[in-house]
Length: 414
Image (cartoon, rainbow, N blue to C red; front, side, top):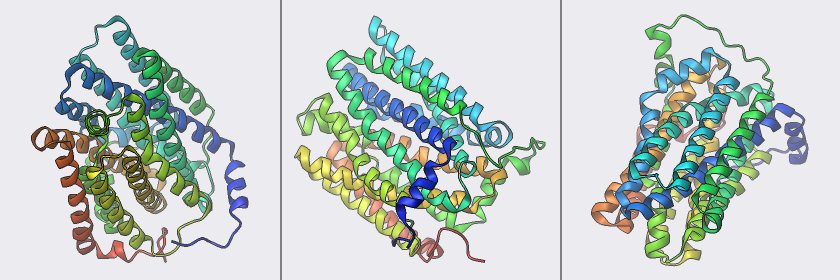
């Protein structure tokens, strides 16, 4: 990783000169912060209701299913309709789901089944929102600023991941779950308003007839690009095996002997490291040995998981999770940059929908895997197996995708 010689302050001011990018950045912060605060409240509430780690896995499964079932539909809608409208609909539905959670928690009718049902709606909205939001970035800034815009958007995401869980845990401890859900609904509505202010440049969707060829064009494109396929699948399997998020309530209460505030800190810790890296990458581009950096970051990711699994100290656990997040942030910026720079805009929605299916699968199904294995072998055993698995994936993928290891720059050289 190296910095380009240009002035980082000048580059940052160039990004800030694009008002629609600022609206996008703020909308993403609001939406992601609301989602993360909601997941903290839901995770703590369902574990309080049942005391069963397997139910924490079901929380992930309820959100995972839409990512797997709907990518073809999501990609077609993102490439055929106004992407800003798609986002606003998702954000309003998110707000309605948060209000349903608030009403259920306040009146006391909320049950395990009700939580999982509402989470399925949340997961469906999330499945549409995430890839569609990412397709907006190339239409907000000039191509020369795209890698820094992607890194800055990642910083927005991680800022929200820091603030959201900590805020959710604090409000939950002080005022109960209903207050958390009402706060989330307000943030989702704010995101919808900000999204409506965005103006895109050079992105006009053509409503071509839907055929089998156009329906599966995203898969065909990714299959024809081994570098993109390798980067996406590396993230899929590393996160599938290495996800620890679902088990944080178990570690917080049973191993680290802390409460909701501690859970909020643990949920925020990965984003602290990720935000630090994203801020650096938004100012200094990675312009050498990009492929090698991706594999090194993924290996560090696996080691940090092992350290977290063996820790009985809250401070050490937070530090391990911060490194976990920092290494993952490098992977995210590299992967998104490779995909968005190397994919034509007219099919970016379909490709990003598949990319989000993989990343959504890795995180949500990874939570189900973690909860299921924890039910059989305990939380520590589940996380240890995940860290070892992530390291094994790094070794295998270096052999399966040698061209990815050799990638030097984000853009293709002609």
